[in-house]
Image 1: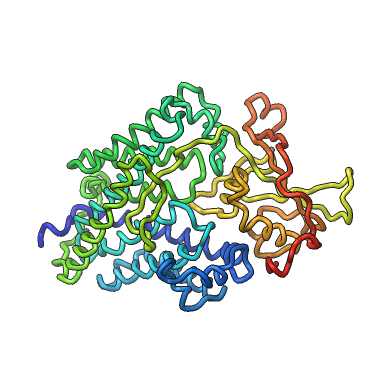
Image 2: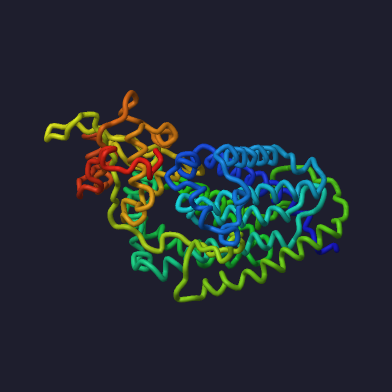
Length: 483
């Protein structure tokens, strides 16, 4: 069928697939580096314990067949190797069926991780990666033209990401409607980046203009993705620019980068190739009938599954970042329906003194991404995902988010657990473990220009209250928490 493929999108597909492979690589590396402390057999939320009560139908995963920390590591590193191979072009060097299989294996491996990841994998960009990865399975490779319908499904995905986020804002916090949300957001967002302090100190009229521009970018521009070229390319370009603005102003793992990748699918590759002076691709053979049938079946399935997220978009009770099925296909997205006005941070400290007195010296644990030392400029981590740091932000807002893992976390610190300490930037007790660990809740705010020049501190913090009183191993049931 001649209408089935769009050869002029060859460059578009190339960029989308290589960039997506790079993001898969980051996701699998993050899983390999962090799982032992968070989800391993002796982790904070052990996978074996989860699998004991979660059946396959509730959480489809390869790990229902077998789980061990070695097997998880093998799964994560296998995904990383396949991602790296596709990134350098392996999927274009093999037959079409093999390319389909490579992308399908990536999707299945990451689905297996997400579905046993519990709180640590409860973020919207996990579903976004899986949905984008599922679309990539049906994009084909250089031996066939890009399927037209799949390219349109990418536009439908970007529309839901952007339009859903825009609607949840208008329906949520009033500060989005009075254009004042950015008075607070850069300071209170989950994980500020190195430029967030400067974004926060932009003039308030510019903040209001940013919010207004955001409403246009999320509520009007996505509609233009479904118009003919070159308007669709212009709309994709505007979305990409706004996402790069978000990349510069904070750390949101691979959320923004995935949105950029999906939006690029609407860019007219032939025109881009002409601008770049690239040669025309060689003529491609006819698409195999089996692949056409496979793509059409997948598109039909997406059409059916689209009912639930489409209904969610028009619902007054709109939910965000929600999967309507266990395979994370055709999801609902959205972000920051409400904005915090103040920033609360948990500071974890320890001491090696045998008894606590008014003169006890407490030493602070340093985290890689979340604010701690007021004189430390926030670092850029995205698209890498620091899962512990993100959950610490949620725990600072409400202890409900920490009920299942924070006390076990302190038990790990009291044992100087190696895998847990690898998640941190600094351990103030490198020789012997602390005798006591405590946590305190602080309000953090960005310093002013004058305060920064005078003190060299990016943050000022004020103690709110004690979050966790000093505990020792005598206070904790160490057998329960498996330190």
